[in-house]
Length: 64
Image 1 (cartoon, rainbow, N blue to C red):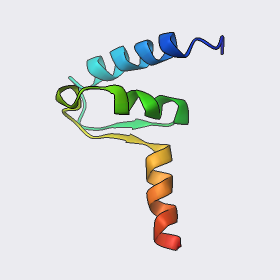
Image 2: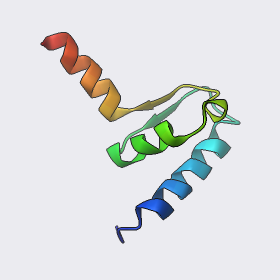
Image 3: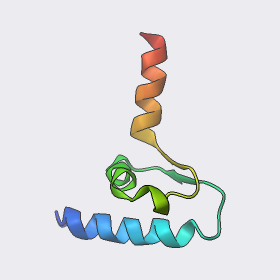
């Protein structure tokens, strides 16, 4: 809310790395978090991380 995108992304990235150690999948409910997934190195994406923007675009593509 303070406009510090870099800090937001760093916090989300750290949480994703930590959470991925104990869960099978992560679902991000906020679109602002989706950009963080793309910035993570592939080696740090050991589990599926689903984000609403990509899922929505894929679904809309099936309708067109």
